[in-house]
Length: 313
Image (cartoon, rainbow, N blue to C red; front, top):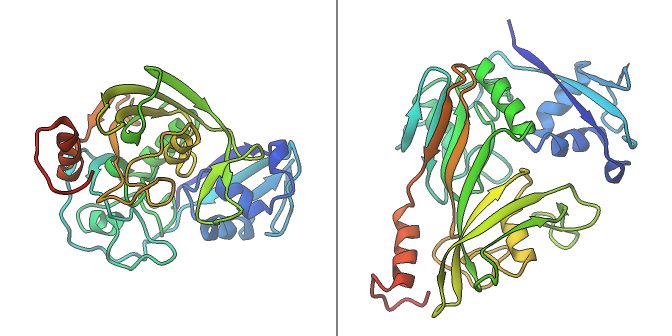
């Protein structure tokens, strides 16, 4: 029997007028694909203010109460592949990996089949299908250019528990970011709403009609000669490109960021360093760290003067 889960979302005033499928995809922070949510709506899985809604062009209004029941498919259509996995931790319910920079987490527009982390993981172990056949086991994502710790659910029970913890902000992540310019303070909090850019539909930006977004940061090390700094960033919300957009907003774009930065570099210097949460089944405290990849370590070593290089950095 398929496993289902019901999720309630309330429409905020700035989201009024959006199509229901687009609203739910963004409100649920892209944990499920838009096509999967559309299928759930067509199959009668949506109630708005207690009434069934199956029309995908329904426009939401402020304070609408949307109750969406997602039905997990019985099988996965992705093709498992053989690939090298950097496994940090694994048990019967979850698996934690150190994702390399440059690898896409799951299939999407323009992504070649057989190149994703999910497909390599499926070649190693079964994953929960609760998020839909296109995104097995996915409870959160990292940008293609971002390296570091990423968590997957192997069972449906673990999946629903983890997604609930993410929505309730009970899973805590720490990123390391090398940025331009040295902050004048040792720490700070960025509270600025994020929405899609009107100029570039693949980019996000700070805009007053965007969704609430909050990031804490602290200075780890300054490199005065290069006018760069290493920060630890703690995202409280989980918006698309949140850390990259927020750091650009305060005048400290990430080194090597081709979309929000200044000068292209050999990599985006953003690394998901740590994740902390309560195990979804055993309820034990979990804290997992992903060491810097060589490309990140070498960049820092150059700034510290521990390596000599003819490359401009």
